[in-house]
Image 1 (cartoon, one colour):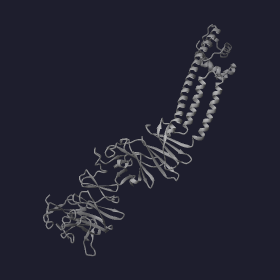
Image 2 (cartoon, rainbow, N blue to C red):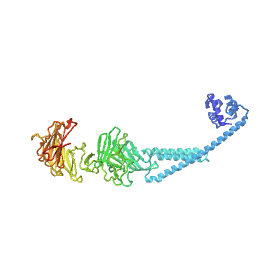
Image 3 (spheres, rainbow, N blue to C red):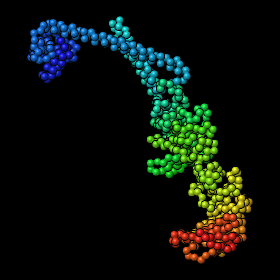
Image 4 (cartoon, rainbow, N blue to C red):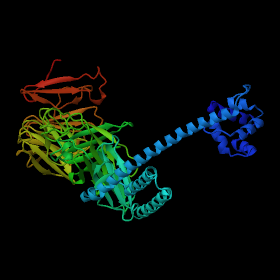
Amino acid sequence: MDNEKFGNFIKELRNEKGLTQKELGEKLNITDKAISKWERGISFPDIAVLNSLADFFEVDVSELLNGERGKKEKIDIDKKIEEAVEKYKDIENKRNIKIRRVKKYIGIASLVVFILTLLLQLGYYFVLRRYNFEYVLDILPYIVNELMIISLCLSALYCISKLSNRKIMIASIFTVLTVVNIAFMANNAFKNNCIVSISGNFSSEVILKVDKQSGAIKIYKDPKLFIFARPKEQFQYESYGKVKRQWLTNDICSITYLDRDGNIREYVATFGDRGNGISYYYVTNALRGDWQVLTQNGETTQLLSDNKGIRITKNGVREQFAFSDCKQFGTIALVLYKEDVPKYVVALDENCELDDDTDIIKKDGTITLCEVSMDKTKKESLYCMTYKGEDLANYDVISVKANDYELKNGLLYISYDGKNNIEVPGDFSQMVSGYKDNQYQISKEKTVFYYKKDDEMYLVYSDNMGKSWNTVKLESEYSIENIQFITKDIGYMLKFYDVVVGSAFGKISKTEDGGKTWNDIYFGMGESDKKVFSSGSQIRFLTEEIGFLTMPNVMGTYQELYITRDGGSTFEEVKIISSSIYDFYELPTLEDGIMKLEINQGSDADYNGGDYKEFYSQDYGNTWKVLEK
């Protein structure tokens, strides 16, 4: 007899009549559980019930026993029932053996769990606590206790079979121990807000405990098994409200919170190193260079680190941070402050590798810049825009062309060879627009610049290619239009103090001691009380006696040229040709004793494609001849 086939046939007949197991049981005066067991093939009705079932479903008993309609045959019902019962007994016996085996496994597994949790607690209380280790979550020891209680009771329940009343005894023990554990947990486990944050690759773990009453924050170190750690330090300020965590790299986590006064505070948890892991180094030094990234809206985010400090340019706004405004965390992160308010976190990315000799980030290393805010902030990966070679001993913050300059971060850099940079002393932060061609000089004999600071004007110069520098205070009410030295000692300067409708009021000054002192030599064209220059006037002295002065009109359509032969005391106009087309005289140049002068068409160059004429003089401007093209 097929027990499963019999059960399915009973279910089929019941469904045909639209009855539930409960309804069928009521009609036969038996429980719905008995019917459920029949249908599942794990039990069998006795002969009386079997006849009632056959009558109720209007089938023959033989059809019922065979599990299908139409299969009527003479059978020994008692024998069939006896076979079915024996089969069910065998099934039940196997089922009981399986249940006992499962209970045994549960008992053994529970005993193992109990031993492990007991060893964990003993190890914590008798070993780890001596070294100031704590559970990372205050609720964890009570969870471990509860696991011990449950595993102990389960192992006792399934391993001890001799006691008849073991279930009641074990239930009582479980209840008492659980109540005691919950009581201790309610009293001790919720005093702190425990925060655990794990990096993306699971290599680092930040553990914080915030006292709910005082707001004091402790950060933990040396995590073991992700459940134990030791207190590292307590934050300087107590917190109020949420604590924000943001992983900048897999070993750098930014922690931001508000203190009791509503001020934003920042702490950076670091777990790695970018050097050899032995020596300490300064992140500000490692960052030396010009770092940039192009944002999606086309604006550039820039970080410039040099001798003056760090300058951040973001969304068109520049912020300067002195080294005293920078706080280093570990050896891979930096927080930039403004008046004790954290503004930015700078992190050395994991691809950074430090040069062994200079501790500067090698080529291809990137950094991450992130604003400090309680709101969601965007991490920006910046790339170094300054060239880096293999030897970083001569590494320069920026790249400067030969005989040129670069202004960065309020600092001025020059280069004589395009390879090595020299920093010019002074505060050039107000010179953001740079210099015009004639407002500075870079040469082997004389290098000279000027800068403004606190409404004062200063001249800084070098006579030995940047090995040493001198600084001289100038008249602050004048703007410098032109600086020129013809030797290391003899120099000239054109200065204006006012400009009105194309006319400029000022003077030409001369130095004979390299720039230490200046004497006024000329005050412009015109009568003694109405002397003026043009707003675009320039000077150029070729010798100490011979020099030139330009006087352009306000539209730039023509420009007059004047020459002095007495060192700038007097000037007379240079008139080579009379032309309404070629009427814009450029400043002459001197090379190998020959002066060259170009006369072009100015801003209204509309003749013959902007053609120009060129002249030369071999007698310092007394006579001029056309230079054939």
